[in-house]
Image (tube, rainbow over all chains, first blue to last red; front, top):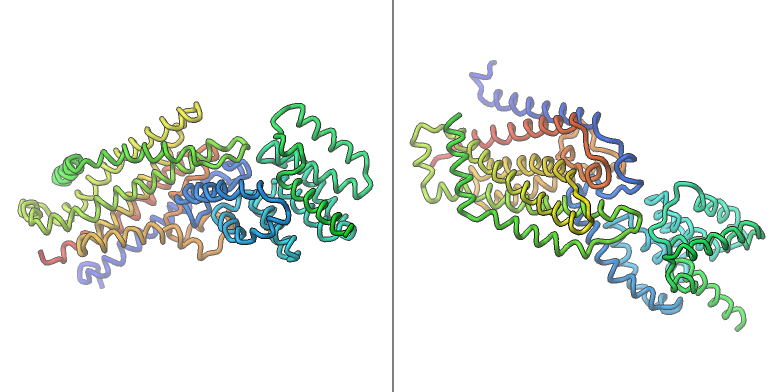
Length: 241
Length: 244
């Protein structure tokens, strides 16, 4: 049987040859591809499956988030509970861009207030898995553990706090860093570690002195720490009643 | 070979006549509108996000240009019967198919270079930094869209423009999306044994890193040759068997 007598054999052979060239080239490409760690400053955006649409995906997530974020700043703890409808949009943002940190703590916080503790902690852990160097999401996890049971969860809270304050942690903004320190300081206060609590207080003053911390963050009414403060006030007023 | 180049030149002239160059102006306008909407993470990667978006928009714009060119040329030539003027002049059908694709591939390359210059200019103005590394992504996009174009030309030898465009789009999405079925994590590359277009995905190294090596660029060219050979071979066979 020869290719000349059977044109389909030639066709199949040519197709196989082309596929072999493609597979060979892919082997060479995989061997010479730069490691992800060197290419992404710990931010891996542009999942293989999304490929060139990765940029559009990131932009879309940013656009939706920029429309939702101001709404959270306008609401107190009780009002946020009424905006559970926003969770779907926030989860969509997470699907589009798992590296955008802020939606994780909003979703987790609302779920925790709704009494869905395990779901809230799962969202927080998902955030950490997708953003292992995010100090903000460590603070968010500590906050949720605190809200769930600050005594029983204290060892895990301190473990996460130490990771959050460790080397290699990143913060998207000075406000996020400032507010996260507030959470970590609270964990140390609960643990009775006055020295560390004071150190974090000093770190917050240092950030203030360097400038860039917004008045909203300094008032303790915004971001991840603002949510914790609002929750504490709400819990205290409920206790008094 | 001269016949191939003559056909290619005719395709390039036709693309200029059809004012494909205006796509570049639209792209530049799109970039300028998109920049203020970019999310700022405040950790020094905002220009990286710009590069990601620039590459993605470049890819989408190039895909539209490529499909518009590749899906219409052959069906229109057949419909207007101008194809007979060419094939009657001792031009083999495979030469006609390959020459047509080659001309479009050159046009696509010129359009992409213009896109990149526009993106670099917008980036330079916005971030006070020339991002010449974007040319590496341009090269990858050129090769990948060239493959999609070859597939679309192959389909257009038998089918009309609509079916050919749909086929081209399917290859674009399946070529990357099929890797999702392997359930890889974000940190993993597609395995070498699995034919996909993922080898041309250089978004992360270009947008957030220091680019790719020369070896990688060579690997992309080899993969490109494999894909294009496959589709041009198929397209030539299909066109040869067509009753004009």
